[in-house]
Image (cartoon, rainbow, N blue to C red; front, top):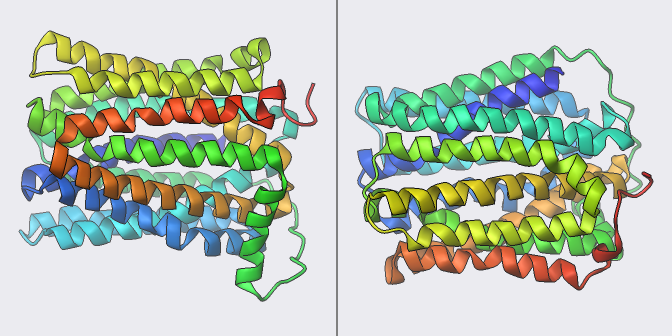
Length: 401
């Protein structure tokens, strides 16, 4: 419950910050499309560079302190943005640095978080536990996105980022209050050689066909998703001309529909099976990402297409994530889960960096609209990937009825 509370507050702030940071660049510093994409890349680089090391470290240490200090670090780093803006010294270089350091702390937190949850609940509770965490995160997303746009429009983007910073402090205090002790971690057989320990995660991924396929589809989705994500704010702000308040309100709908996806995760998976639910969710992601590319101007048709994106993509992404994470947690022993998560993060963030970089170039050369269309291919490619894989035979988690 305390982890749940901390995560809900943290997600609320993150939703505010995720919108506010590119808006600081676009509105306050008049950034180009490629500079906005670069800002996104700086947030992803830590997952690529630090993920493997973080996975090894998290398998050696108790996960709870890692979570707490990661939240404290994000509070300190993000607080620097409103302070610099207050004194008139905010520049793109600082935004790049803030995005990078925030990504470093976020990398440690996310890897530790997924490794920490199985020590708090039973294996047969994983889908339900991840569903509840996603459900509350969706509620936080609704309010966070909605508030972000109006905070930026009425007060300023730096003020919105300060709200994000405070949320991480609240999350740290909530996690610190968890009383349950973690089970002792087994010492790695090759302790002392970080690279050999990091290699363990890749070895496990490669030698388990189900895990390999699952992570492969996630990497594909990450690559195309970042192509789309690199230009969506540029498209809605520059090409459609929508004000931040309206954008935030539209994006907030994604929180409501994500909640629906979280609530439906357990019954849909039980009714149709794990594989069918994963494939269906990826197809919906592709359709949802394709919709905004047909929007023109600020009229009702454009608003409907943006709302359609939120109604399809967000619940499908939540549904996919719950099942993907739960399946991974059920297949991989807890003592190596940190290293496997680190390896996954390395692969996903490497693909995301390529996608974000390519999205920035495509945005400069062909415009944001074409870039969004290319990014929408990801859901369809990932779905086909799973259709011709060992995962298609799975109906339930390993070891569950």
